Length: 210
Length: 283
Image (cartoon, rainbow over all chains, first blue to last red; front, side, top):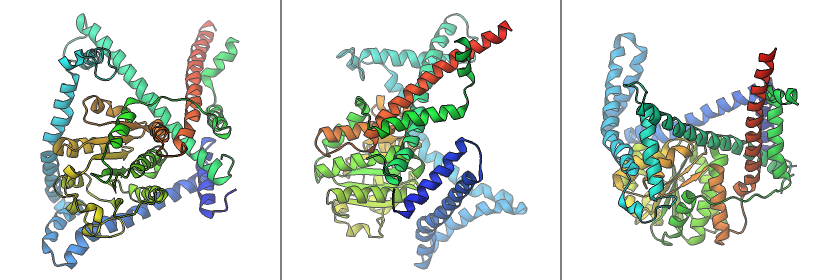
């Protein structure tokens, strides 16, 4: 058994959380509320040290008065609570939206649309090794068929009958395989978290696993 | 027999939890080892890091994750750091997620101690930087402006390792360890705009989202979930960079058996559902 008090606290809180698997109980609720409270406390300190101090307090202390402009724009969000001045929150929202769209639209289009269209194309370099599991022609064709049939399934402007129905049905299979892969990965994620807790309880706490 | 199978359609969830616990604990307690292959996406990151020149351009690790997903991402961070420090590759650490701040510091300090590496000369850690995309963009122009002070409040210019690092041109690879879409932002705002190489270490839940970016080469490689960490651990042990398998490798048999159990329960649950439906129809 561990002699470290923090390991004991962590172990008992872990067990309190696990107790919810049986049913809701005061031990679980205590651990849940403690976690929420700690998180809020952590974020207050972190945001003060990483946002407020370096970007507002320190520049103002050094007489960099231009800091007051973005600060004032940011403070306008609080007009939400003054009904008569409520409309003024559109100013910071407009600035944020304009900045974000200007910054991200061209880059997102290049990374998400152009590159992905390029990645869907079958090209001559794929002919050098047709069966290559990463860059071969067969994978290229599979990706192309998958993308076209899946998009066809999500095309609702025309009734799904004839060739469109056949293609859409193939698309459903690709979508299902995609969901299956995602589900498999999700199971692994949840199981991994449980394994890590078990490793902690049985290794660090009661030293049963070497 | 049919009545017995029909019961699987309405199995009490507490029995499922108990079975899952057994499937996880038995392999862990008896140190059952299972074989697993190394995915091409993992090997790709390993090969890339293995070709970074020692004492040359550093690897940047962004600890973009919270404690909730540390179980999956900590092993990756440790394995990659061991690989770097064993080869003499310098490392720059930072975090764009608020809670990644202390996680990154703890892991970097601990692994650096194992290899006798010094803060400021062999590695630097800058902690949490607010602004995510702003920081990603700013580092493409001026790293010093984006990271003026390190985690311990040491000014950028006082860190000898950072003297030759001005922008992404001086970074060999950015590895974002994340439980959400941070690697996606890295691809867009650092990879697409500044052409720096990006790799991702993702939780298993998020890993499938990155496959399109692997196929197009926008990601150098990906470590997916605890298996990704285990694969990297195996690679560095095989290459002699580290002496023993770590926590993720030990968890692989528990993952394998728990998956088998879940597959079995899904099959039995479906059989049970259809049988109980037929029994009800007969009534």
